[in-house]
Image (cartoon, rainbow, N blue to C red):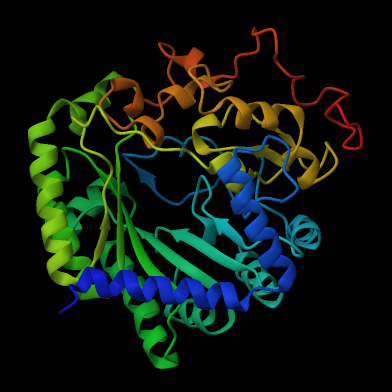
Length: 396
């Protein structure tokens, strides 16, 4: 039997994951296995910590992308190196990965390479997402040779300079191509299997016809995985650019992307078709990940940005927020008909994209669903209340 390119890529990924697990400390392995068991059981209070900490390095960005819902939010500044060291000191015994995704361009934080290197020394894998504009050949060499990066993801929304530069305003396409090539070539020089080089793309009408060619571009560049997401609509004018209103075109484009990916060996991860009303899957995020902003504000996901679950600086640390009453309520209700965070009932990750709400960002028309259900009788205390600030209390 001959394996397809994508079968071979998936096999290689499984092998890499097994090697990554073998490289963990015994305490990390124990925590990871405990975390997997607790999330499968749907536990509310967890003995394990988050498998991944999603750390926001900065809110600043050097681009103004059409599909971005955050670029006008400067936020509370950059993640300071001293604060990162505090996060590292608390989480190193049990966390498996840090993800540096940000609401801006992570590499605008000049301390980020040192943070990645400190994480590597502590045995913590890292995922980094970047627009590629600041990733020089020298930095690419540093990231591959000295930093324990598991996945490096480039944001690429088209197969041509014209499309990418139009959708990612301020981008120079040639610089992005050089950044990707520098990482791939550095991996080859070192004989390194990591980082896995990925691309993220936002699918919309403005770039839909180019998306199969994006898979071909990924194959030529040495990109192994391509992750595709629907445009999150902010405002009425963006609905004209959403594939939600053109399901025939969406399916045709996605089918062609899958065919090309299978042919060329690029693992192409596509969201469910907009006509798939039967799609349903569990969300493991409240058991898996905690987002920590530059000021310590903690959130459960990027679709709950204005509804924090606490603050790791003010509320007693990461584990205190991880097991506070609010986060436990989220876990206990997320798979019910009335999740405590209302948006969970509409999230495309859980229920697919056949409903309009799954494509919308927060606006004046729908702001209620982007909120916790504080009016319900079993609502926990709000973050910042005295009960949340004392992690030793058993009624937290």
